[in-house]
Structures are given as structure tokens and as C-alpha cells.
Image 1 (cartoon, chains in turn yellow, blue):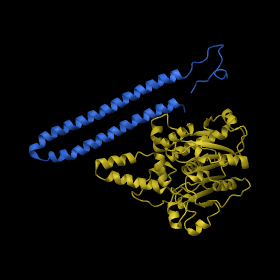
Image 2 (tube, helix red, strand yellow):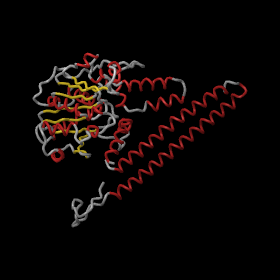
Image 3 (cartoon, rainbow over the protein chains, first blue to last red):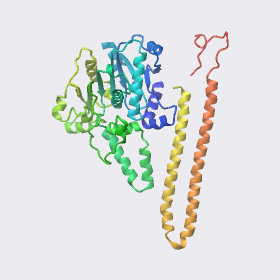
Image 4 (cartoon, chains in turn green, red):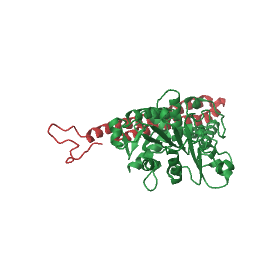
Length: 323
Length: 112
């Protein structure tokens, strides 16, 4: 029951979380670390109690839109974090946040959280490996951008970041939503306008997914009214970090697969342009894993995805070509 | 987050929903009526009474929706007070000196 209620609150946060945060509503989720259904206090004592065998390598798992950390759970009860702890001795930190807030705001909160986590962690931290699923990947990008511009100090501990089903070049479904909303609002009929106004109530976080906005200035820029094309993102993946990308897709004709990707994120967006045609989908670049037949929701808890994550988290593994 | 906090948040969100919904519907009702009144007010013989009815109509719609919002707000405040009371009753008073504490396994912990 608790898990379902948490999920209901997470869905509500994803839908109208920006409004909840603005109105100081008790349903708004504050960004924090959760484990076994309870929030872990970000204090030395709290972390020591939650992580008695704290490792100097931390995997930070950041969920996606309208999710909680339960999205990582596999049918056998394990998840990427617990498997990394078992196989590589890493400590998994599960982040929960209000996915309806704008991605830049959540990124800034995550940056502050990571600084505080490192300061209070029971042992000196050697490496942080952020693993972002879907929107979580963009939140990680926003956090690293904040750190790169001097807003946080955790960046030297991040050597690699793993993105799972992250829409680096935006999500077309949200852009369709934007187009439909604008159409409804442009028709001179009060009822149609009202429907458009209601559709436009969707959260800032959801709207940011359309063009993968990770900075406030990106959110403010003027956009083509009815463009449905993948935009070239103005913020490249941060230099100096080894970025690894995992994208899934439905099965079928390569052109259809390229367009619909994993059902929510096109392959081009999920691989940040790494897979642009049939040939590159068969042999993606070394920093990209393209897994056909795995849809968006399943990417968060699939053994094949974990195999890639584990290989990329192995400290003996050399960095791939830097992006 | 405790259950009562969630209920409080839900009540606040429902109140916000009623307020925003009422304002949206009020706007639609007035704009729909405007179409008819625009036609009537363009016909010289019926224009003066049409204008008067238009003003009366808009005032009635405005008053109705203001009432809905006020009642919703009052219900929200009432529920908030009830939740305050429930919260105070639900949280046990601190143990007096000599009494076993909440961490004592012999005593049930009734905190949220």
C-alpha cells in the first residue's frame, strides 16, 4: 500500500509538481535519498546507519518522470544498485525527487544534494557514478552543468555518467502535446481554449522534456511554434566526463524503430545522435549501447541493461572515446 | 511524509483545482453568452434591454462562481482545522518523568 501511495504521489508530482512546489503543498516531494521505502537523513549518523558498509564508490540512481526508486526493481527483487553493490562493491544511493519541477531547478537541487552527500558520507568518496533513467539523465546533466559553472564541487569525483533511455534531443510526444495545446488555444472558441488551458497545466518538468532543456536560458528561448523535429541541443554533453548512453527500441522496421525508438524516446534522441541509420544501429559507437526489443519502461530494470551498466562501472574498464 | 500531511496536501490541491476550474468555466460562460449578446446588442430596438440583461447575466455568473470558490475555500479551511485537531490528538504527549518512553518495546508507539 505504501509503495502504491508513493507512486500515486510521484505521478501527481510529475503532472503538477511545479504547482505543488510553488504553493508549498505537502504533496510536493523534496529531493532526497531513499532506501527501503524510507528517507535517509543526509547526516553522517543517518548515512552511517543506512549504509553500514559504505563504499568509496557511489552509484547515484536518478529515476525518471512520475516514478520513484521502485522503477529500478527487477522481478527478483534486485535492482541495478543492489546488483552493483553485490558485484562491484559500490554503494547505491537512490534519489527521489519532484519530477514536475523544471529540470534546471531539479538539477540545481541534485547538485547541492551531491555536495552534501559527499560531505556526510561515512568514508572519503573516490568516485560518484550517476545513473540517470529517462528524465533522470537530463537532471544529472543539469546538475553537472551547475557544477561546471561553479555552482557545486562534486564534479571532480564524476568520471563517468550512464544514461538509460534519456531523451538527449527531446521527446517528440511532449512536442506533439505542445503543438496540440497551441492549436487548441489559437482557435477562437472559448470551450476549445479552455481545453487548451487545461492541457497547458502540465508541469514544467514535462514541458522541459520536449526539447531536453537543462538550463533556464534554454527554457526561455523562442521555439518554432509547430516544429516536431529533433532539435540540436545547445548544451553538448560536458567535456571531461565519460558519457555512456543506453537506448532501447521496439522491434520492427528500422525506419519505424528510428522514429518511435523505445516508444517514448527516439533512438536518435536516446543515443544523442550516436545511431543515425541502420548501419550505426547495428554497430553503435563504443560509448553507446543500443538494445533492440527493450521498451522505455523496461529499460529501468532489464538484465541486459544491467550487464552494460556493470561493464561500464567496472573500475578496470578504460574510458571509451570521450564525447 | 505522514498520512495526515498527504491528506492536507490533497485537500489543498482539490481547493486549488476548484478555484482554477471555477475561474475557467466562468470565463467560458461569459464568453459564450457574449456571442449572443453581441448579436442582440447590434439590433437597435432590442439593444438597450439586451445590454441590461448582459450586465445582469455576467453579474449572476460572477456571483455564482465567487460563491462556489468561497464555499470551497471555507470547506478547505474547515478541513485544515479538523486535520490540525486530528494531528494533535494523533501524536501522543511526551511521557512524564518516570514513565516508560516510546522506544520501550513494552509500550506501543502511536506516533505517525
